[in-house]
Length: 231
Length: 286
Image (cartoon, rainbow over all chains, first blue to last red; front, side, top):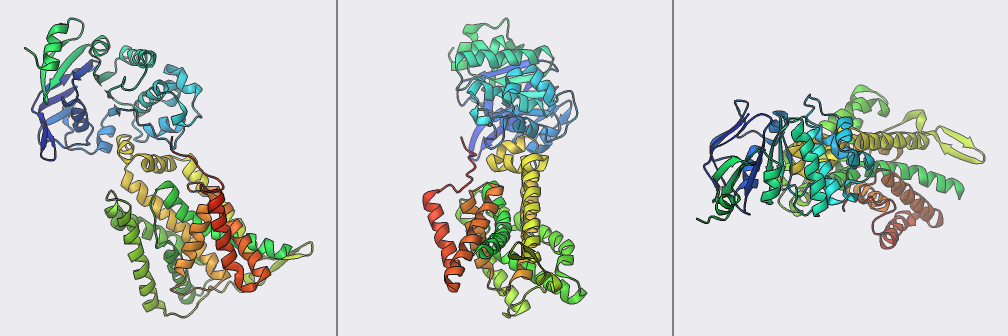
């Protein structure tokens, strides 16, 4: 479904991604883990068209989308739940969801379906988006991304800044989507959370994938070594 | 006195209409266009040229002037203002200030410094009596058109896909792009919309008063006062701000004929001191 090949990218003169390969199968949930500065969010920036790669490619169903604009990438079925949620503050909850459908991609996700799967969001539909708690906002951010009818959902640091109870709610919501077979890539610093919510994991360090495997059989000690660069 | 205040409210509706385009720029797009008043005057001259060459009533120039000014706004945003964005607050201000100076000089060369107006014909003298008060049909028509344009604008920006896209872009352009919004095109359309509204204001302005190439900054001032009095980002607040300004000017003129504009400015200043956010502050930030 998604195939990343020899991806290299930099912010100006500062190289961040040093060439790595990564595949995500259809219906799979992949957890991209790694310490701060490992290159996880930069990988998402390239995948969503916000940063052009220096070399390498990102293909979705065989089509190379590297170098596409963010608008084109949404039209090709990739949707991002950005770090920090980043709802539109001047819009209500419902308007935020409707903006998610701006690309008019056809598919099964409608506002009614989002409300059905996230009843809490339906309850606050007319409220200003910033009047919601962090966890509720995160559900809106996920719903907004779903409104573009994506083939692939990219979730960046879902648990960031949320209480443990809110994180439980958000990951429970993500579990529902996983059950529906939506291809998902999650970036997460909470290793235990990431492994329990995914089929496979890939650990990044210094802009490269240093370890990958099945989440359920992952060796925690091996992951910790890869995560922190210890031998 | 009552007639004076009613007439003040009616001219205030026109001030509100001057301000509406500016309100969209300032409140929704968070950009300032210092040439706003000059574009109003330019639209009035455009209507005058059409009247002269086609021999038509000022209102019949609307179907031509409005789309032309939409196109001018679209091009202005896409090829001038857009290039200045992301470099701080000063470049857009300086560029539109320069544009204002250029527009005034171009109009001076093309149309001379003579004072002009758009002859409304019999519409200009028609009046209706409501009780003991005689009210001009043209001012009433101006009010009706203003309210209609404000309602249309509120509906477009409050409840359509385009309106949501403008507000989302204004909130966070990068995230708006991630939603598939072509943010540059959306803002160009919004600026086109703003100048199209200004063109409507211009034609009623030309029928109700006089204009020359140097009157743009005064229109800009009235527009700005209406927007700030009403509350930045509030569409209906701009109409209310314009009407308050009109009534204040009329009251000043009633006391001493030359005092009208000064009283308007004093009311604006007092309003700013008492309610810095304006009458209908729209809180958009958390």
